Length: 335
Ligand code: ATP
Ligand code: MG
Image (cartoon, rainbow, N blue to C red; front, top):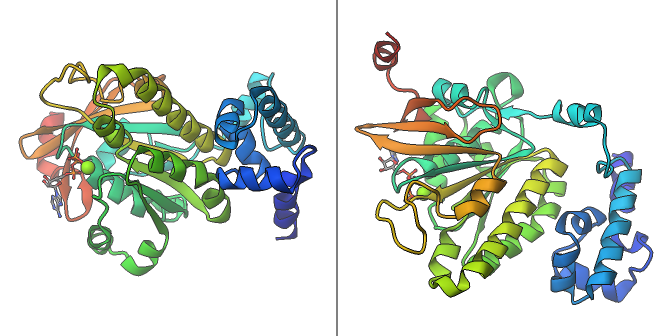
């Protein structure tokens, strides 16, 4: 406990040379509460949100980086492969609660990564997110990480009743489970960005192992309607995505985001088989899984992973949230 307090003090903004009370307040108003936040947000964003000139922001962020490297909280600029290997050994996995999806993901949803589920409406993205909020809380021997979840809800589809229902169907007490899910409703894209900027503090103060953004791009879709604004939309989405990726790496948490694919192609969002965030989302996500309906079942397919095979597996939606298809179906498929 003492060590933890000391560490938090060392992260205080005003322990950094050049941060007086006024600047500290400005940083806090922009959701930058610690030195870690400074390093994670980076100079261009610090300059924009705090109203600093870029050179001063670069200097400030560099100081923050140096301090964190000295503290062993951040990797140096040049690191040996063995150090990266060591960090990657801390990667943990959250079971999806289904054998098939776990097999597709080679064990489950990883920390230090952004996993994107994309698919048409009703393909099961939100149901999967609800299930994961429960699974992450289980002890490690049962496939969880004994941690809480943050659910950033942009479409107003988070349902505590559904969480309670899934928990009961999995023989779990819903009350403590609901306690450990922090919900943030994002009403528009700037609000969604604000929530993510504040996320660092919430992650530091709670034992969170999973951050969900359902859906990541819905607000951007709705708000950016003309081609003329495409560049701004992509730039903001890019920042948003990179921030999430950095959180996942620096805090060793898993980030899961959903992305709706349109069945009817429209000229702005292009190819319907590509998720609506376009290239930005695709390139920032570490893993991308395409979900689709197939009769009563759903099918999940791994797309573009650096080391997973491009395979697909069936799953179903039921009272347990996401689940494996009935035994006969699976074994028949296997023959
Ligand atoms: P969107 O893109 O519109 O957000 P989505 O991919 O998030 O869609 P979900 O909300 O996850 O879709 O899935 C909706 C489907 O989940 C419903 O069509 C229904 O078939 C199924 N579903 C919801 N609740 C239950 C339940 N209690 N039991 C079984 N199936 C359910
Ligand atoms: Mg949904």
